[in-house]
Amino acid sequence: MSTIVVAVVGRKGGGGKTTLAANLAAALARTEAVVLVDADPSGSLVSLLPGGDRLRVVAARTEEVLERELDRARGLVVVDTPPVLVGPAALAVGRAALVVVPVCPSVVDLLSAAPLVESLRKAGKPALVVLTQVRAGTRAAATAREAVAALGLPVARAELRHRVIYSDSLAAGRTAVDLAPGGPAAAEVRSIASEVRRLLRKGTR
Ligand SMILES: Nc1ncnc2c1ncn2[C@@H]1O[C@H](COP(=O)(O)OP(=O)(O)OP(=O)(O)O)[C@@H](O)[C@H]1O
Ligand SMILES: [Mg+2]
Image (cartoon, rainbow, N blue to C red; front, side, top):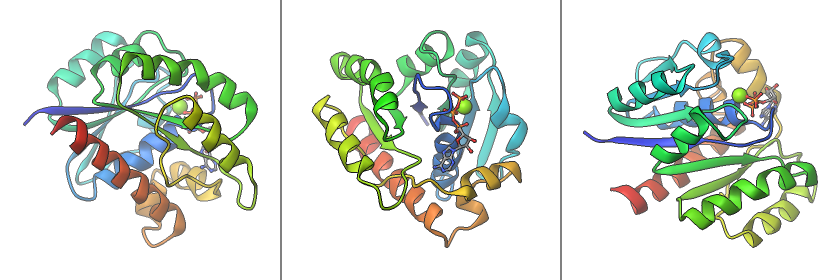
């Protein structure tokens, strides 16, 4: 079985990478084994999330360890990265079949994401922008969607709303996907997971 790496990447600290990586991995793990690699040296994810039946959570605090984990893993691997695009994040992008970039719909976050989005497009790297922390009833997400599309990368049709369950669940060592599988957060993450699967099928299988 080959290794398929999905790297969750972004330059914006607090932009929602860890939240998206954990929930996406949990959603993908509903049907197949997934390794979630915490490549952020702060190690917050690995200390919060014990994993489960089909979800294994491992820490990779250095590039060397990340390389080893990626070599060792089989099947689907989701990598959460720190907000700098050198070291582990660059390695994860290099090994990724798909790069997922969470972007909050604000002008500051869009400006921060634009160079990354453009460099992924120029490199021909399969990528998917996911709007996150979207406030219900605002126009910001639609505006952000247009701005990202203008940069030439696909934007996931589904988006992550701003919901307390994302932080509350992680605080309890869970994800929104497994804490409340019937809830709206789990539903939106499952939709993102479907889009990720579709892109992986298109590009790698
Ligand atoms: N969709 C969401 N709804 C509500 N809160 C969210 C959402 N996504 C992220 N958050 C919260 O925003 C904060 C930052 O999120 P997160 O840790 O996922 O970002 P990050 O990009 O991994 O940050 P860092 O760059 O520091 O690693 C956290 O408190 C998290 O609970
Ligand atoms: Mg993080």
